[in-house]
Image (cartoon, rainbow, N blue to C red):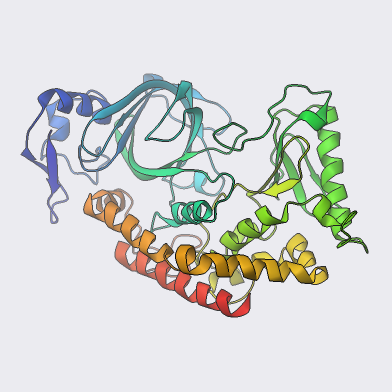
Amino acid sequence: MMQFEVDAKSGRRMVFGVKRAAVLLAVCLAACGGGSDHSISDDVDIAAKTPPAAGAFTAMSVMTDGGAPIVAKDTYIGADLGITDADGTATLSSRTTIKGHGNSTWDQPKKPYRLKLESKASLLGMPKDKNWILLANYFDKTLLRNRAAFELGRRFGMAWTPRAVPLELTLDGEYKGVYDLVESVRADKNRVNIADSDETTAPAKTGFIVEINARMDEAVCWTTTHALPMCIDTPDPASAVQTAYIKEYVQKAEDALFSDHATDAATGYEQYFDVASLIDWFLVNEIFKNQDAKSFASIYLYKDAGGKLKFGPLWDFDLAAGNVNYSDAQYPEGWWVADGPWIARMKQIDPTFKTRVRARWDALKASQIDTLAAYIDESAQAIEASGAAQRNFRRWPVLGTKLWPNPVVKGSYRGEVDYLKGWLTRRIAWLDANI
C-alpha cells in the first residue's frame, strides 16, 4: 500500500512507502479518477483541489457522467462511485445518481449532496440502502456536531438515529474535504421502521413521517391551529385521503394538548403523543440547544399504522452547541427547545412531565451524557491523526474566518473542538441544576 506524509511547510504530499501495487492502482483510480502517476506526485499542492492521501482516511470518489456539474437540488445526474477504506482497500464500486442537498449550506462553497445508488448497498458498515446524504458541515468547524448529537441519540436508545461515518470526498477529481456519509431519513426496516403501505385509500394502514418545517418546501404543508408549520415527508406523494388523515390526526393531538382535559387519561394529549420518545428527543436537542429545534425545521415525527405520534429521528445539528450568533441558543445557559409551543404546554399543564424528564436525565447523565466529551475528543483525534482535518482546512481555509453564523473564531481546529467541549460542559451543568 502506498502511504503519504504531508510536508507542514509546503502542504504537499510525498510518497514514503510502497506495498501491494495492485491495491494502490485501485485506490488511485477511485480517488484520482483514473489519473496518471503525476496525480500523486510531490508536485501537486493539496490545497489546490487535489485528492486526499490514499490510505490515510476513508475516501469516496464520485465521477459524474461527462464531468457534469451538480447545480440543482431537484435533479439527479448519473455518476460512478468508489469507496476505499482507511487502509487503502477498495470496498465499493457502484453506479449512483447525485444531486444537491441542504438549505443554507447549499449556497456555500463546500456543498452537501444526496446520493441514490443504482441498487441497495451497505456503505461503510451501515445497513443496505439506496439513499444517502453527504453532509458538508461547512459552518461547523469541528466537523463533529452532527455526529456527536447522533451518538447521543443512540446512547439514549432512540428507536432509530441516523448513522454517520466521516470520509474525504473527491468529486470529479477535485478534493472536497471531510464529509459525513449519513443515512437519510426515510421509511424502511433499517431506518424509520413504520408501515410503508401503497394503499392510498386506507390511510390508517399507512406509516407517516411529518416534519415541523417553517420553510414549507414539501409537496404537502399546512399550519396547525397553534401556528406550527407541518409538512408530509412520507408518503411522497401522499394521496388526498392520506393527507386528510394525517392532518386531522396531528390537529386532534394538538387540540387535546391545549384542551381543558389535556391530562385526562382517556382523552388527553397522551392518547396521541408518545411521551417517552418525546422526552429523549427533547433532551438531546436541549443539551445541544439546537437552534432549529424549538419550532423551525428538521423536527421530525413519525406515526406507524395504529400508533401514536413519536418524536424523531434526530437531524441537523450544525447550528447547535453554541454555533449560532443570532439567538439565545448561542449561550449554554437558559431553556430553548423547552420553549417550543408543544413542550412548553406540556410543562405548563402536566406536573408529571417534569418528573419524567428529570428521571430520564438522572438515569442517563453519568454514563451517557457526561461521557460525550470523551467521544468528541476521540473523534477529533481520529480526524487529526489521519491528516484529514489538516487537508480539509487547507482546501477550505476558514479556521480564522467568522462564517455565518459563528459566534466565535478560535483560529485552529483544536481550538474549535475545545470550544465545543467547554460549551457542552457548561450546558450540561446548567441543565442538571434546572431540569
